[in-house]
View (cartoon, rainbow, N blue to C red):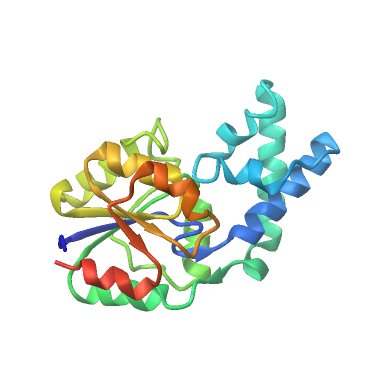
Length: 214
């Protein structure tokens, strides 16, 4: 079993259970702006990419996209603390990794204020040395740029780093950046959606991440 000294984590669907909130915000936005709500699977396919990228699937108008993003964020913020929760056992694993001196970073397509709010709500604030958000890069997952930036900021060796995520976009970004990937199975994506990305590791339970420690 390879051993890793750097663990990079996606946020939504990996560290924090925000999926119900995300889907609720999507449904609300589509109802307000289009009076039509597509199936949840439509939104899930883009989960892990920025909102502007996801809403561009429905319109080419920059003004309409901006309005949709604003509606989404207003609903998300108003319901955040009530709907976001911890995945059982994940925080304990992160604390163990930190206590063992592992380099820890976040790589998310969320903007920094939302990232900080999610981390604080689930008591992860202060546990990660580096946060790479949508505010920090020009290209987003599945492009490797966010992962590469996290490695640079942590002064980490990609050969001993693993990117832990729940989505195909996470796996693709990690693989393109030259790091190992670990697909967690407690997020919203079925294994069949992740298999084409060929994750290095499959993680059924949070404590299995500790088996990857260097």
